Image (cartoon, rainbow, N blue to C red):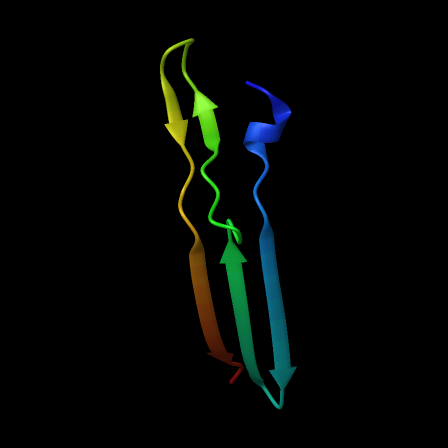
Length: 60
């Protein structure tokens, strides 16, 4: 499997203030199809589509 098929763009940002936190993460930023792995010459699986995750947290 060529190296170029295994790359995907990931971006994220995090903010914290007064015990509160927020983070935003984006995986497969450009929503490109890519081969995540192969289990033989004819059996390959594609990676996940674009995923956006927002997390809010508070420290007690």
